[in-house]
Each structure stands twice: as structure tokens, then as C-alpha cells.
Length: 443
Image 1 (cartoon, helix red, strand yellow):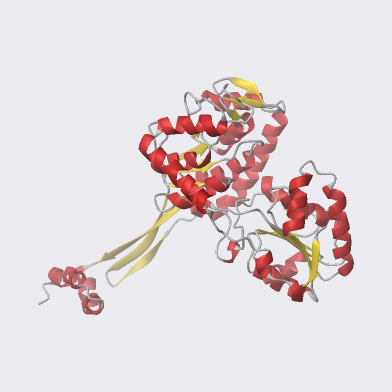
Image 2 (spheres, rainbow, N blue to C red):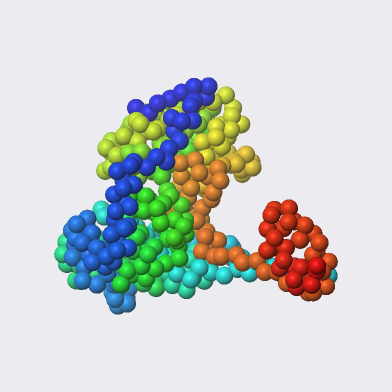
């Protein structure tokens, strides 16, 4: 049963996930990274056999695998992915930046240029389920940004066994090509991915960050993963860029008495089935809605294939908060800073300016969060664990670099020389000052 409290009983620490890395996990990942740096492909083969139960002769999928995937994935699903890709592109192309040039003044020219990152590695989780949506959400913004080479790393299918160089069927009847679920490869083709590698786990992050004999070193790594992948991204950050270190997925729903409890419960459970530590919160001014949602959660839980996972999330991290007013609801929401925020009320846009901290906002009665997971267009890679206080969704901007430029004529340098020399001397950097004085022959 989900816990229900009043707003004055709320303690933020009972919901917000703390990012605490276990010492054993930290050291295990550090050893994997060190081994990949030292032994390259040899270590990568060993880890693939150990953790994935699969022998891979060539980590990189042949170019023909993408065309083969399109032939082996259900035609209707291909069309669905294409429509989703079009929506994602339509949204993200509005994020393109072009830099700027400030009009010249007194012999000074200033500006900024925008250039794409050259090579990006996208991690796509594998195991028990495929994630073609992850491919689309990461690769399409990278392509729009102009990234020269987009690479995917994904572990071999758990049903593949040692047949990684053949086309085989997964246990659910779907196709696995060269060790990778065909739906993931098809999504890669649709999104514009250049290369796909059959590697997973912390070892894949290490290979992308440092390079091996067969894996090229990338400039930035994006994409979700398990705790080992997240810890590996944390440890290689600074050697390469990363998007974020994602925690458990979460959802917060603000609703009043007009909301349908069946819909609210379903939306909360959509995140609970991600994992046993995924928070799902309802904030409402209606005691009756709170009661009915609690009952509906119990009813719908029994209908879920992943009931055990979702139930633990509801019991350990689920919460219903009863507030005195809708204004108070938004105050609490901004304090929690959810990954996903649903506003299930009449005239939801009236309340949009009250949202200060949220990864993505879903407006009205007919906009459940999974719309954006797969299809609507906004990115589903979002800040978790309260980090929407200072960060936002994955975007085209994550795949570009901004470089400023400065030009001064001799006369302009002369005009600024006394100020710059004095500033350098105040900070104790004589050589800085000399770059000015020697040019202008100042004694």
C-alpha cells in the first residue's frame, strides 16, 4: 500500500535519491577500466564472455547488418520508429545554434563559433529488453548537431548465447543479428548511426573513453545504463565528456479532484515498473482522489507482468501528499525537482509558469509521460534524483562545442593596455603583463 501524508509531514530526504557510490562498486569499475586501458581488446573479449556469456569474434557489426535489420524487423514497427524519429527531429532541430559575430567597434572584433563534437559514443542497454528508443533519442540530436561519427555500444542479446556472428531468434520470437537485437540496429539505421559495436557494461564505457585496438576513442559518451555503467561514466568524466549520471526514473503528478484516479495510478506505475527504487508521487488537494488513487494502484499492480518490481517501488518510494492548495502543490514539486512532472487539471497551461524545477512537463488529461518516452519529440533522457534543479534534457547542445574568438588592432590594444597590465600585476602574473608591454614597447 502506498504511503499517504499531509504536506506538513513531508520530508524531502525520504524521496530524493542520494548519489552514494559503494566502495566495492567503485573499485570493481576502476579495475575494469584499468584492465581495458592496459590490455585493450584482449580484456574486452574476456569481459564479454564473463558478463554476457557470449564469444564475439569481431566487436563491430558489418555495414550489412543495418540493412539486414530493416528486413527482419516487423514492417509496421519500422514505420512507427520512422514516425517517432520524424517527431524527434522536428523538435530538436529548433535547438540548432549558429554562433554570433559582434559588429566591429574601435578596432575590436568579438564573436563565438559553434562546432559539433567529432566522435560520440552512445551506450544502449541490452539484456532482457531492447531499447530502440534510446538509440533515437541520443543519435538524432547528435546527427542534427553535425557529429562526424556516431557510434553505438550495446551488449550482446541475452538470448544470443555464442551465436554472435549469426542471425538467430530471441526467446520472444524477435530477431538477433550479430549479437544485437534487430530492433536496436534498425533504429540505428533510421537515426543515422555510423557504427555499431557489440560491447556492454563498464568495459564498454572504458573502451569508448580510452580506445582499444578495434574500438575508436570517442570525445563524449551519452546514454543510460546500470550502476556499473553509471559509475564507469563518472570515473572517465574529464577524459571524455558525458551527458549525465542518471539515477532511478521518477514521476510526480499534480492533480485536483477532477482527475481520473485510474489515469493517475496508471501514470505513476509507468515509472514504477522501471525499477524497485523508482519514486512515484502524487500531490493533490483532494482527499478523495488520494484515497481512490491508492485503491487503484493496488488494483492495477496485480495486472502488471512486472508486479514485483513495481510493487516494491510503490511501497518503498511511492507517496501521496495531500496539500491545502494547488499553489502549495507546485511549491513542493519544485522542491522535489522531478524528472517527469504531469499536470492533470483543467487549463494546465495556466500553471506552467509555476514550474521551476522539472526535467519534462506533461500537460493535461491526455498527455501521459510514455508519449515522450517514445514518440512525441522532446528528449526522454532527463535529469533524475532532483538534478532538474540545475540541468535539463539531452539536447542538440550536448553535441556541440562553443569557441569564442577575439581580434584587436594595434590601436585597440594600445587603448586597453594600461587596464590589462594593471589587472595582470594585481594578480601577480608578470608574464601576462609582458605580453602587452613587449608588443607595444612599453617600458
